Image (cartoon, rainbow, N blue to C red; front, top):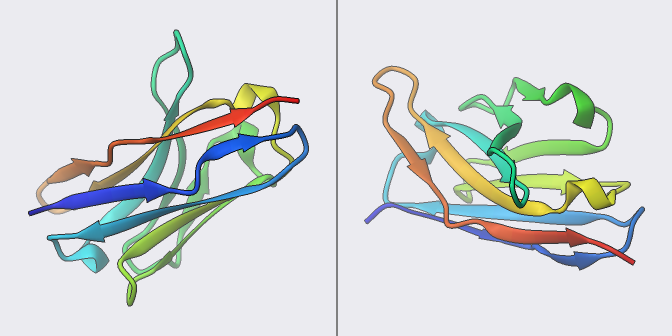
Length: 118
């Protein structure tokens, strides 16, 4: 059974930090490109960051460069999103997404809420 389970969300003050985790199971994690997406109320889901299967290449939404860092540990089947200098506009549900490039197989996590507010 394929699972992507996000954790680490919560309420944080502006300027604070959070580290999201996404634990994968039921598929060959190291064969998948992993991404974080987010969806704010009333807005479309948007890409936050992507990391290659081996972890050597990471890409970010232009507006988030320098504040967010994606990483992965293939030995632990886990992908992370370190979020620093958080702003109220970062408030959203954050989703983990897996994609196998050669055949397009994809999986989504259930999401974790991040709320940035004083």
